[in-house]
Every structure is written in C-alpha cells, then in structure tokens.
Length: 349
Image (cartoon, rainbow, N blue to C red; front, side, top):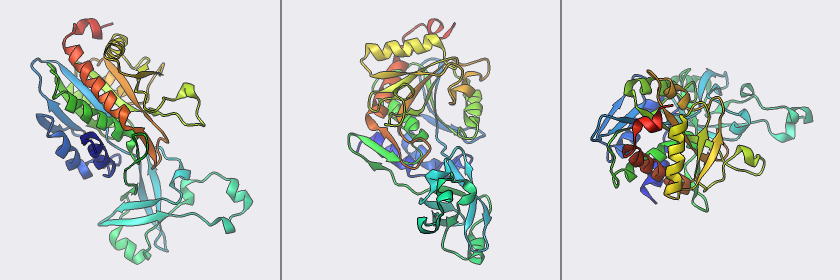
C-alpha cells in the first residue's frame, strides 16, 4: 500500500464529524508532521500545517476534513435512540447501516426498518424520513441513559477497502480525498523546490456552512489559494455533462469563485506536464470552501480542483487513487511554476 493510500485509509477510518473534528486530530498530526515544519489550529479547530519557503508569499491549500454524521436527540422508552442529521444526508442511505455512537464509551448500534412482510404497499411507496428511523444499541432505557447523552454524535461504521482498478471505497471520502491530495502534494514538494510558504489546511465545518475555511483563511491571509474538494463521478444514472470520468484526472473549475488568470495558469501547467484534467462549470458559486476563502481580508485569488467521487454523502463513496496521486502531483508542480512566474501577471485582473 502506498503512503498516500495508507494515510487516506487512516483518516477515513477516523471520525471527524462537523463540529467535532478535534476527536481524532492526532491522526492528521502524525502524518503531516513528517512533511511539514510547523502546526497550529485556528479557533474553529482547522488544522494548519506549514512548509516554509524562502520568500514572504503564502499559498493556502484547503480541503475540508469534516464529514456528515448524526446527533442523538432522544432516548426512547425502549432504549432506542432518535437522531438528527449533521449535514446533508438522504435518509434512505441510512437504512440497515451499523453505526458507532460516541457516548461515554463507544457503542455499536444498527439502524433498522420495518420488515417488508408487514409493510403495506402504500408505505413502501413513501420516501423514508429521518423521523421514521432509530438506532438500536440493544439496551434498555435505564442502561442507555447511563452511557448516552443527548447531543452525542454518531457515525456510520464502514472500514475503507480497495476495489479493482485502483479504486477505493469508504465513508467520508468527501472530503478526505481532498486531504489526501494535500498529503500527496506535500510529499511531491519534498522532491521539487518551492519558494513560497505553503499552508496545508484541513478545514472544519464545511458541511454545515464553510465555517472553518472562513476563520482559517483570515488567520493565514494567503496571497492565493488552491481549494481541493470532490465532484460527482460518473455512474450510469447520471448525465455525462454533470459528472467527471473516474481515473481521468481532476476537474478544474471555471466560474465567478475563481481567478481566471490563475485558473488559466493551472490549465497551462497541466497541459505542459501532460496531466489529465477535466473541466467543471460553476458560473456563480462552487458550493466549496472557495466561497469563504475568496472573500477573506481584501480578497484571495482562488482555483479549485475537484476529485471525481461516486455516491456522494453515502457510506460507500468511491474514488480513484490514480486521480488522488495525479492531482497531488499537479498541485505540487503548479506551486513550483507559480513561484517561478510573475505573481502580479497571474493573479490580478
């Protein structure tokens, strides 16, 4: 297993639910500390790893570390747990999942549903709602109340695993895939020169409002930013015009969120060094951390590279390791080329 794949599996198998990203921060520190010179957190808990350069320019790489999850709202008389979603979740994707409840101790549970044998035809046609579901931890209310507190977070239990054709699957690849691209870029920057100071930023609370990107970009005050997130990977039921092909490189986004000259430079570098890339169109807003970073301080020139990902916001998301490695290498090469270019020419309108 490659170091980047090992890193990806490590962070995917750890919980970083929005608002609770501090729980497993040591996992990030363990891996990034080998490749960077310093580490700090902002006041919303975003993880900022710094690789020092030889000039005073600052380049921010941003990828959100948080994931969607659940929060306990009530303990039923029979010991079952009611819950609400943290972030955007299709309730149908929760059926028949096993979960981990982060209570006073970690508890295993399952989310069940009424058997089809006693479900009416009318009920079968109805969309599942969060209120229809509950978590069964196999306890009485009396015992559950000793361990579970209202507000405890819950994650789907799903170990990362390899598929064929260099694909991997797990929960939370949105956006651990982007964090893995940062890690790959940090590895590549060990091999090639960079003059700028690089800030590898694992932002928090993206899934609930881009909050970590807002605070961390104000703290760093970068001269430019490279945002890394996921986009919709191709599957049979989706239009090819709305998706990316898997294993064919990252999607470079065009739209109001992104500096056109900097984006052109990224595309030119990809072409010069024969990196596969695809195009993404977001005319008004990208729905990513770029929305927050772009307007930090007096404004930050941004680019976005999207990693193709299938089955977004489910526990079986799929990405290609080839894409992660290719995009990470491209980002490192892009940084090197920026450092050897006229900054004013490529960042100003």
